[in-house]
Image (cartoon, rainbow, N blue to C red):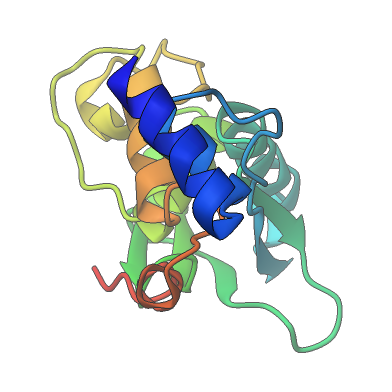
Length: 185
């Protein structure tokens, strides 16, 4: 009650109506705008894995609505995807930037290509390997059985990517806004 009276007095004295919600804890009627980060990938050199890369990207798009992984047109790609005969790997160069190699060795060993793609894209989104052997964790990688076909990130993995992307809420403080694009892994 004290705060409500104080707020009313401030409004009366200084015309500071914008302070009332902050002082009395009234809920804001408008939700904070959500920032969506678009990350462009080029899978034109992924050869037979191109569709798997698209499926892996779509898994992240469904799990983390504040990011959108889209195929690149022209030179806008910040992620390049290649096919080779080695083991799959990612070389991150900051959040949403880097190189993915879709290695045929894992496919030859029986691993599911869309899961491989989603896992490697997870590294590009700032996630480390989590060799817990569980199929419900995308970042468990090759520690999960070859029978695992899930491309869906675990809720904790999706939440970490959301935080890595800058939280998904437009920052009011310009210092926070500057940090949203400065994650380096």
